[in-house]
Length: 252
Image (tube, rainbow, N blue to C red):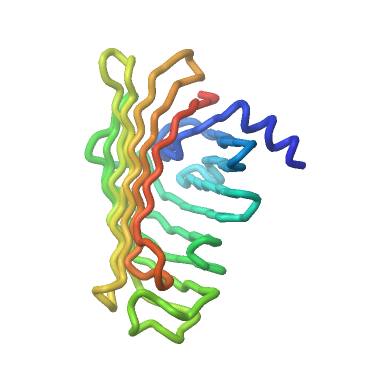
């Protein structure tokens, strides 16, 4: 199995998670494989897989799902094994203002999250919508339940609880822009997600990418991801930062 993974890692693919649900295509799909392997004195294995699909189950509806898997191993010791599934159902996404419902499921080995799920609803407003560039802002509200494998947190008020439940509000901003006659593509996706019940419980994420077209269906990409969680297991850092390089493949 590891030999198969190493073959994949020799040919890294890093694809953007930003499919525009307002596009008129009935079906769009992407598949991503990224990774790194280092042997010798220091043994490191990083493997990431991501699928991204949007389709129209009915005339006025668009369903979009992004599913990812991450595995990291350092010195033959597992450091990460995470699953994330983001699912949206949009109504009339070609309009300036349109509603959606969402459902998220995730796990995180390093942060000792056995299971986290969110269900909610919201609306998106299209500030800018053109073929090669767009900008959107969304507001949603969710119910979240997170089950931890540990009960010792960085904030003592949560100690002893294996599950933390809360209602959240989320502000999303995402966009894509073609610059210098389509020679550079800038895309970004960020959110801020506070609890509606406790001011000390919040998270945010900023995802910024630069793409340089090589071919119609192939771009070189530089990606920077910065995440923050205010409630973590004791002695864990609350921030994570990733700078990655790879290729974007698209079928449209």
